[in-house]
Image (cartoon, rainbow, N blue to C red; front, side, top):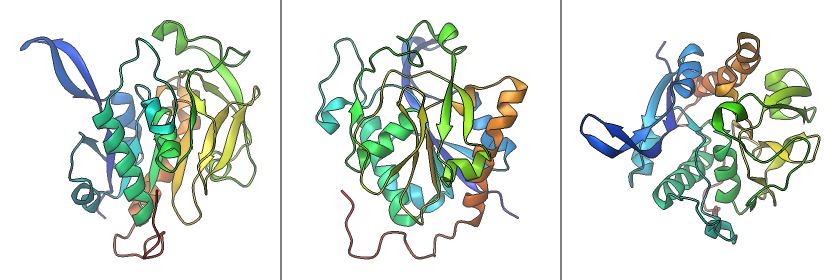
Length: 255
């Protein structure tokens, strides 16, 4: 049986290489590709392209990865001073999410990926979360990765079906979150402070989105607890049939 191809979006960074300082590189941490491979998928790194339809024709599933903030101008918010935005990545990932929904192509959104999906269909974000017990101001990356808090997962949600529980302890590597939820999406998980931590998609679309970073929960017990999420994506991708009826009726438009 052919393993499904899972596209994973990348992040344009400028890093020092043998070819010179601050070279532009489409990058992805190995922790994104590894669980896709372990679940039986073939990870395919995606760089922004105008050929979104052609790209979607080749894929069986998508992971919209984490990274920098979505430009707030896309949902009526104000840019933050000192933040670096990537309009090309925003446009590419929004097009991927919209195209995936039209096709019923399985999709997993992680952190920024959840936010991209919400914005793609008319939702908004909190540009900068106020401090709470569960979401203190972001600190240095190494320390931030160690922070944990509880989330409650709605019974009957797609996330509850994947994890088999309604309460989990997850990491906190974000300073933004969903504000207004996009039409046809539902909140499937929240932190105790009320911050949205998961979304379910429209009916008929294999879609999961989490605000935490499952790929960065690397301690063995935590990684094992997150493996079902990647397994669900790969299983749906393996069952995906590009010839099947689209989840959006012909003639209906998506914003």
